[in-house]
Figure (tube, rainbow, N blue to C red):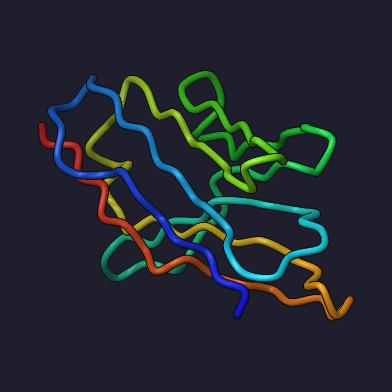
Length: 120
């Protein structure tokens, strides 16, 4: 079964840093797009950043200059380094990926979610 497992996150003071990881597991042939979304209480889920297989990245304006997205294709893992965290970054963060399994069926998968809290 193809799945995404998240790690990292937690509680930091405003201005601090955290790193999130998202690892894909299962019978995987290929992972194309990967990305991070977040959802704050009472708000809709929003895009944070995306990365293509060749490493091209795209960031929401709120993340530009503070967050860095990277991936290790060999390890099937994506990382989100978050610096200069602000209270408004507080949310549950979800990773998302488009994965082609060994049967060549393509799935969109979500991670389980990770709480990130930046206290003022």
